Image (cartoon, rainbow, N blue to C red; front, side):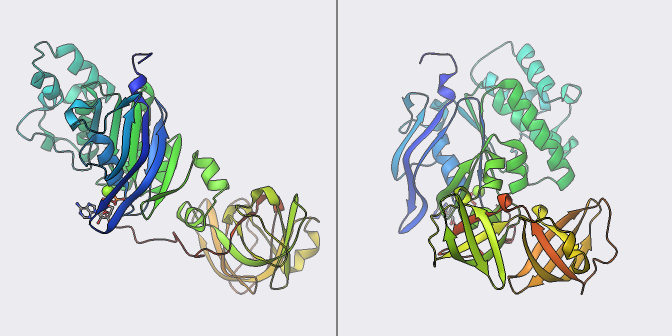
Amino acid sequence: MTEKTAGGEVRLSGIGKTYGSFTAVHPLDLTVPQGSFFALLGASGCGKTTTLRMIAGLEDPTTGSVFLGDRDVTGLPPHKRPVNTVFQSYALFPHLDIYENVAFGLRRRGIKSVKKQVGDMLDLVQLGDFAQRKPHQLSGGQQQRVAVARALINHPQVLLLDEPLGALDLKLRRQMQLELKRIQTEVGITFVHVTHDQEEAMTMADTVAVMNGGRVEQLGAPAELYENPQTTFVANFLGTSNLIEAEVASNTGGEVVVTAADAKLRLPAQRCATAPTAGGKLLVGVRPEKISLAHADDAGSIADGRNRFTGTIADSSFIGVSTQYVIDSPVCPELEVYAQNIERDPRLVPGARVVLHWNPEHTFGLDAGQDIDAGVETVEATP
Ligand SMILES: Nc1ncnc2c1ncn2[C@@H]1O[C@H](COP(=O)(O)OP(=O)(O)O)[C@@H](O)[C@H]1O
Ligand SMILES: [Mg+2]
């Protein structure tokens, strides 16, 4: 190893796991750079925990190898790997106070003077004042921070977190997301975080791997995944996408023109995940917040060069910062539009005829051979 912390890079090489004839994780190649905050995101059952457990050594891979830095650790038991795991069930020792819970890993290794390290760790998770309390005297979020401190005191090079915030209510979860991010920045070690919550993954991680059915469908920075989804699953699972079934009229290599019902839409060829050919099909995607609505009476005021078509407001929900509209149109049923709440046009009510329009640059194209509804609002099951 060339540097002290070089073991913090996690490299999975062809790692896969089958249970009998069922494949939980298809052979997977993945590199998590040293010091990064990496999220494995996907619906319940897609293989996140299995992948994490193979990194931890809690599960033997059926195929492939796990490397930490340059070291092949595939055959090593969990306690021989420079890795610690934080689970959703914090599993604190109920009879020990917070101080002793955090000190546990050091004491087990026979370290006598633990005071400074435990003190530093409690400061890191901002629980210095709670050292003498028992776990049941803390809130869920505080208990989770104790679990993080207890794992970090062993100086792992990689911290694995499996749905660590799953048991917390929404507000606390938001706070803890920022808190975990701060801790990761401060200690600088690699975090691999498993979650089914797309907002959580996007808020916290530098890089997100979106998993579906035991495979990584797409990997990238949160904004990259959101703006340039490559599959319908990623487009629908991360936020909301309007996907319009269209026919390709032409592709110059720079610009693609498609038709859907009576609408002619344009998009950049480079924003297509597939190579569209004239006469073929394409799923044309646009995010709800990129679309503007104009009352049909004002259609003449829309600038040239924008993608546009006419529809009818089917539903509108005012949610404070924005109004969310559902628009019906022959081009696409139940299209979603989010309008920021700046000035509201009182004519934009259900039943109104409207023109939807947006910058063609904000349009992406996906292979039409896929399930258009993949990744849509899967019921949030507890992991
Ligand atoms: N020990 C096991 N035996 C058989 N099937 C398992 C076992 N562990 C997990 N699975 C299956 O593997 C799939 C992936 O599980 P898991 O990695 O826990 O998913 P996730 O963490 O993404 O919810 C699931 O369908 C699950 O039922
Ligand atoms: Mg899981």
